[in-house]
Every structure is written in C-alpha cells, then in structure tokens.
Image (tube, rainbow, N blue to C red):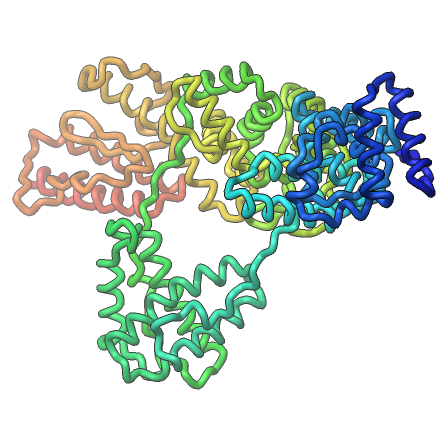
Length: 633
C-alpha cells in the first residue's frame, strides 16, 4: 500500500512543467488549462500561500484554475484546508487521482471497502467525500491516518454546518463508514468513533430535593454498592432511592438520620404512596415491577446499613418481604407452530441474509440477542463422539455454556460466515479485548437494533404480528419441553442458574399432567359415558386401583384424580358424616369399599404418599365400625 511520492519542484517553472507532463500522461488539456496555471503561479509563486487567503477568496478563483489546483493537491504541493475541500465538489479529483501519487492509496481504499461489502456507489462516495480529502489535507499515507485526522475532519464538518446553516449528514455517515475501512486496512484508527462521554454524575447529584443528611447517607451506600455492581445497576437503585428520600423530606422535614425511621410514621405511608404512584410523563400508574423495586431497594439499603454497623442504621427491621407487591407470572410468549413456520419461511426468503440467518440461529439455539451479537467466529466446537456444540459467551448471567448443534444449524453458521465481512478483530465493548465476532457487516459488529429491525420486517411479511427476539428463545424452550426434554438439560441449554427459571416453560405443557388427564378421562368415560366427545381415547391396561392416580371408591363407582390436582375435599365425606346410617342390606357394598380402601392404602404406602395413605386408613377404620354396627343390627 506504499504511496508514490514526488519531490516538490523548487520553482514555479518546475511546477508548471510538472503540470504539463501530468496533463500529457492523462491525455487531456487545452490552452485554458495552461493559462489558468500560469495566472495562478503569477499571483502565488508559492502555492501554499494561497491557502492563507479567506475562504471566500479561495472559492472565487475561476474554473480555469481548477485543473491546476487539483494537480497541486494530488501531488502534495498544496493543502488548501478542510473548509475549502468541503465546499468543493471533488468528483473529478477522484478520477484525476488515479494518475497521481495518491492513486495506489485510493485504489487500496476502494478495494478494502469492496471486501467489507459496500456497494460501488457507497465506495465511490466514501472515497470522494472522505478518503481523498483526508489524504490531500493531511499529506500522509493512507495507512498512517489516525483518530486525530478523523476528529479534525469532523470538526470541519461541524463548522461548515454552522457556517451554512444546514445539516451535512451524508458527510458524517461517509466518515463513520470510512473509519471502518481505514481500521481494517491497518491504519492506527479505532474501529468505532470515539464519542465524548460526559463524566458520570456523583451519586449525590441523583438526590435533588432530598434532605442533605439523608442524601449523604444514601450516596455513601451507593458508593459501597458500586464496588461490586455495574454502574447502571447502581444508577437504577439511586433513582428508586431518590423517590424515598424526597418522600421523607416532604413528609418529615426534621428527619436527619435513618436511625429515627419508624414503621408506622414513615414506612407504611411510603408504601401507600408507592401504591398510588403514577408516571410523571404519562400520568398512568407505574408498573408493578417499578413499585416492587422502589420498595425492595429501600429494604436492602436499610438491612445493609444494619449489617455494616452504620450509626444511622435503624435498630430493627422496617421493610418486610410481604410489603412488596407480587409480580404477575405470565407464561412465556412462544410462537405457535404455524406462526413459527411462517416466520422461518419469511426469514429464509429475506434478501438480508446475514441478519436473517442470525435470527434463524437464535431460534435454533435459544440464545439471547445480546449473546447472539457476542458470538465469536470460532464458536462452533467439534467434540469427538459428541458432535458439534455452540459456545455461547458470557452474557446476561455472566456464565458461558455449550449448546448442542445439529447438521442443519452447523450449515446455517457456515452460511453466516460466508456473508460476514472480513477484517481485523474488533475490540469487545465490555472486556476491551480484541475479538473476531461472528456477526460483522461493513467492518463493524451487527447491532441488536439491526437484528430487531430485520425480525420486525420478517414478522410483517409472515403476518404474525409483533415479534421480539426473546420470543425466539421462548419458542426454542417450548419446543424442547414438548419433546420431553428434562429440566436439567433445559437449564444447561438456556443458561439458567436456577430450576425456577426453567420451570416457567414446564408450566406450559407437562407431558405427565397430559397423560394423567387422558387416562382419567378415559376411565370416567367408560363408567359415566362421554364427557368431552373430542378427547383422545387412552386405554388403561391395569386395574383402576393400580393406576398412578389419587383414587377413591364411591357408592356408585369410583373417583380418579391426577396427583397435581390434590385430594378432593369431598372424598368419602358421607362415610364420616354423623348422620350417615347403614344396615345389613348394605354389607356387600361396605365390604367391597373396605377391600378397595385397604388396597389403595397399601398402594399409597408403596408410592410414598403418606397423607394419601392416612386418608385411606381413616376410611378403613370408619368402615370397620360401620360393618360391625351393621352385623349387630
């Protein structure tokens, strides 16, 4: 990528002769081209002096001097300033640059942009709007351009916008894309713009309108939290604590320390205020999850202060678990099979192959969208005798995991590799290490927003309504549950750290509950006639007393219930009622009932159902008394 360098002529005559030679090599030129050059050199024997003229004067030069100015800029004899370069249309400069010391660098830039997947129109636009201007003004080779050059160029764009009173977004977009091209060419440039991020507020600044003493204590608590938690987590806690601090300041201005808090005077009124809280922007009641956070963060702060032995900690517990509203537990939002198929077909038909295949990979592996974006190029691991596995990087729960892959999913990943853009490793936004990510486009990581947009487009094409990426994970998990996947395997593949997280999917379709339901329904239909005419018939091969159900003999038949339903509150209630009467004519029925009750008691003992066995034992004792009374009657 070396750039040809031409020695600077020592006199205007040398410049003019070099200009004529350049025109001859290109096969262009006329008397106007030559007269314009002579006129310019007559006024500015040293061309760089012209760059010191006001912008208005520089732009006022006639068009006959433009070819000579292009020659001077392309051969590093003139650096006219970004203000001039941004006001000039440089389409001809890009063409003229092919026969100049900048030619090889411009060709390298265009080639790198093509490898990163940019269209021809985008490549030419980036080269003419950014690359050639950077090369002309900096006077450096392409591989030596750095962040400082890009920052100076961006400042010049801002100054032009202010000068002309209009927005030049196309230049900013071209600069953003050009930085990626330069980075992958090996230039000492960051792969993403270095935005100026303001310094984070001190925790104390979150507590506007809060009593100074209380704000100081809460800020100290947050500072302690920041040692082990992310700043975003602590900032969320600060927002919730601010509501508590402002409430205390408004209701008890004299309160100076949390040690003087009282349950009845302060906590209970705050709980009532949280229950009535509304969103400041919309006026709608805040979500249950928001109310729960506002209460729990206060409880955690007061408990932590007590554990740490702080002087301003309350001397007793003031906030309890039952103070927090219970969160609703909706079932996972999985896609029904027909919608799942239609969405997959829409993604397969998408022209945006990289993003569409990435979403199909999420559906096939159950990864979260953040984990999907973080997948690395070498994420597929072949284990001898165990097939292919997908290594999912550290994500939401800060744990890595391996997910088994079938041949179809491995082929899908191969297809993603074909469509990703190549280039240098990119810096991980969290760890700072250089990583070859699986999902890269135009030299940058594919963002979650880009994937969401593609999913939205595919969902509209499939006619399945609104779909979010996490529904693909729910659909993956639901399909596993329906196929009889064990809880332990489900936890491993989803990356859950507790069984409770995975049990949400078990609540959807429990094969045992379904089997018990169908067996019970079949038995009921055999003895009572059809109950639900379209139920799937299931035949019980064994005696009803041996079924894995909760059972009871009734006067006209028997009752069977799934274990999940629990014991019926009305089971054998008549036999234990003091108004129940019998005589010798009912002895055959009573004896049959006792025989069954004894059999069911032994069966419950064998299954380890202690409470169920005790129920049958009480019935046997009651039947013995009834049979004895019937014999003596």
